[in-house]
Image 1 (cartoon, rainbow, N blue to C red):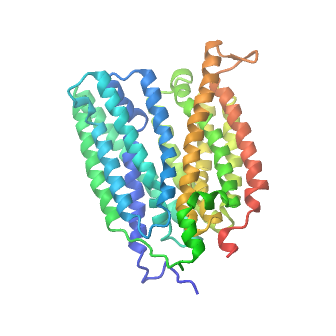
Image 2: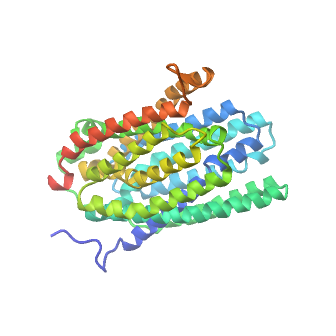
Image 3: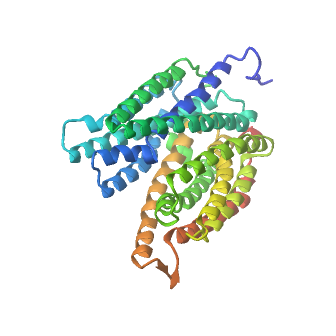
Length: 434
């Protein structure tokens, strides 16, 4: 009989708690390098809009480096590699906030920031899949949905408090005319978070999986790519991920400017939306995770994609005259759907891929998703430019570009939904086939 890892004498209980803390700390650090926070640095060093665009595109390509994790498959321990990669990543992030103090011209500072931030994201993505597999192997398969939900809830709630605190801190420095002081405070915050982050990894245990070293096992370790591409279930899951990322990256990257420049949202209203988004995701994550544990992640995703199709459908009709109401409805539906989609895309791999292929499978899926996301945004941006240069006219209709990309997203989500129903839901779960 399989040993229940949730018993009182469970040696991995503390490590699972540390994983929840680790995920929250990693999320806090990522907040400091997204949206308005990163914009503060890039503006301070005089980075041009075109270079900021290149920076954003390169960062999205960082996920492509997860392919390197495939070659870490078969290692008895990944702890040292994950710890080393995390240290390099966090030091790089900390240095980003120090770039305004480098005694060189702004153009050189911009290139230094780009290189350092790109390095941070590349290293972070190389160790992402091995780290996730390390910690998820400590969780009972029948409890993955609830555990993932709990982890996300802690990160989201903590993230709301952290965002408000850091925003208030930066505002205080700016009101005092001391933006450089804000950068130093952010760099120090990253340093403190980094120390806690690495301690959660150092004190976490790895699960030693006893595995008979057969000829086929050794072969799979030496030829992970061959094994992966011969796994039809994994290929089906990767196709699902591709479809979803096309829908996601064809739409959401263009909503930020639409909110500020066309719909006329204030920063206060944007902050309220962000907090509401986090609260809704936190409230929905656990019920959806519990449902996925009872039924399946495929079934849960079918429900979530029905909700997100409605969200994109609503945004097709979002214009300045109804923007506050319609976009709010979209954002609420989007938050509910993402509470399941975020964990579901990862857990599909755990449902349909054998244990010894999971690190490589996650890496391959995320690498392809990162590249597809970058290419999708790049191609759709040409359409957005065309519509805007045409005076917001497309196919003879007066429309805003985000309305058109919402229609593209709606169509792609429907395609993804059909794929989930007729392909993914028909696959036998790995644990059922043993």
